[in-house]
Image 1 (cartoon, rainbow, N blue to C red):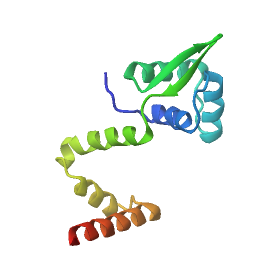
Image 2: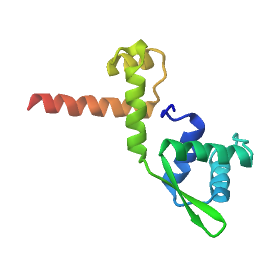
Image 3: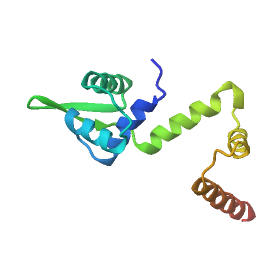
Length: 130
């Protein structure tokens, strides 16, 4: 099974990272509040949760008639997995800088991301100066 997270799985995990454990009804309510364009039906939510369970990214505990879902992976762990997957893809040959240069050249970086990169570059320069 592909362990990379699909966009739908990210959406559900974002809700669970903010507050957990949650039952299915609460997950649906929060996803729809945060992502009004999402128009999944009940069965779709259930399928996405089952996939996340199968991947080992969430857990479900039975409470009365409902399952309560909680994340088993932190946001940082998920981001690390995604970054490793992206970097290992053929087009970038393991180069983080190639990805960043491409994004910058294509105008894909937000002002906040640019500021984060400037701060990181400054920190790395200070570390190198030591």
